[in-house]
Each structure stands twice: as structure tokens, then as C-alpha cells.
Image 1 (tube, rainbow, N blue to C red):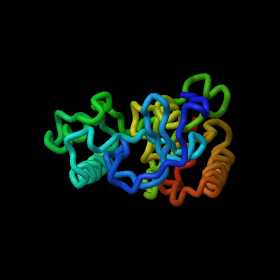
Image 2 (image 1 turned 180 degrees about the vertical axis):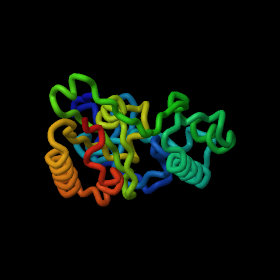
Image 3 (image 1 turned 135 degrees about the horizontal axis):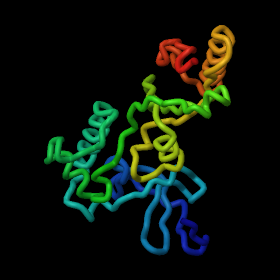
Length: 214
């Protein structure tokens, strides 16, 4: 949302005992700005991204230690439950429900999960289609996803845990001679890996450059 400069207080600073990050419940230390309607975001200004919404600590029943610990527990569950909808009914109610009590609308946040693409008849007529992936931040973990999930991560939708993932896509050839298709797809994977710094991405694909070939 756009705010005129006259409605924003910029270059404010907190030492960590005032606000926590709405995305994971951890205490926030650093610069922030405040809008005329009372909303607070990380960053010196709206141009200093990412602008993560901040919540005032004293407005909840959490103390700082509990907020940080539950935030860590949430991320650990995210690490361990790739491919699932985050359902508080199936997890530890004390930890998870306390975390989500801050943001009731986040009860069904989606974690990116593996989706196997299915090339269409039109794709085979064209000779290629696009594959979508995401990589865990700071970890060599890849997940093939569909375009809907990819788009949600790109736009940083509140419906998905986009903060932990880096999305990317690439074209994938599926017709031609086997030798030419394998060589083309390998070159695409190698170039994408080099350009985006994606270690062992070819290994994630099992170096199978003829997948979906017909």
C-alpha cells in the first residue's frame, strides 16, 4: 500500500524489546518506519526492503523469550513438514496455537510442496514447457512446484511461507532427438545453476535430462 511521505515516520530504531516480526515471532532489532494509521514495518523507509510487518510486544501475552522460542519452533516445523498445509490441529497445540494467536488469519499458511508437472499435448507440439522450482534459503534443498505456488512466492502472498524459499523457473525441451534434447536441457540447468548460484541442482534432478521426453 502506498503512503505519502507526510504520513510516514522514517529512520526509527528499536533495540529489540519493542517489536517482533509478524512472520516468525522473533524479536526485531533494527530500523523501522511507522505509518499514520499506526502500522509498523521493518526498514528505514518503504524503499528499504524487505518491509516486514512488526507487532508490538506488549500488546500480547507473550514475553520476549517465549515469542522467540515459539518462532523457532514454527520454523523447525516448516523445515520438517515440507509438502503439508500447516494445520494446528495436528501439531503441538500449546506451541503452535500460541504462535498463531498473534495472527489468526495465518492458521492455514501453505508450505511449498513437490508437484510433478504434466506436459500437455500443446506443450509437445511446441517442443518444450516451463518447470518451476524453489530452493530453501541457506540450504541446498530444492522442491519442484507448480506455477500457482511459484506465483504465490513471487508476490510474497500471505497465504504461503514465502520467506524461506527462493523461486526460479526454466524452459525444458521435450521433443527432438534424444541426444539434442539431453544436451539442451543439461546446458539450461548448468547455466541456470551458475547464474542463480544453485549448487547441486542437477543432482536434485538426478541428472535426468530426458525426463518428459517423447
